[in-house]
Image (tube, rainbow, N blue to C red; front, side, top):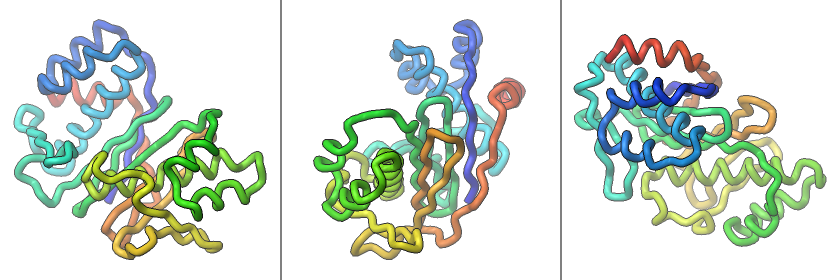
Length: 228
């Protein structure tokens, strides 16, 4: 397993358009539909990040990389069933995890929101209590901790919106051991890449990497340009 992160920086419209020439039509159309420029950059960086990783790990040329989706919409690399990946982005970061078994990753920028109402709607009673029993100044951090863990589990299972957030419960004991109640197969890990962000990974692999490989955006784009 490996975990990657890219901190996004601004990209000129011309450069955006130029990079988009070398990605598949579906992803290009998705990027063009975004109104917010930052959404365009995050999606584009996520796309070229996984393509660079595939080229590095498997030696596949960019033009031969073909993505397909399962019945729930989760993408996978055609012809390589043991190469599993998942991408997430929020705020200034794009993250990606790869593994030889199903993998899910989520990142969220911690923003001030009405977290209690959301937790009551989408979390179990034990998850809600885990949040509100803490000191007031850390409750929102604990909310995002649970949120990212639940999202990473859903993404690892690969069933998309057919698995609702309130259909299962995450348990974190006093030793910080994490599990899904009635499910001992999935393994979790929490990361703090930077103050104000929460990252969670869920895998069927018992050994989750402790490190995040940080790639500079300009280096990533330069490498992708050469790959194309």
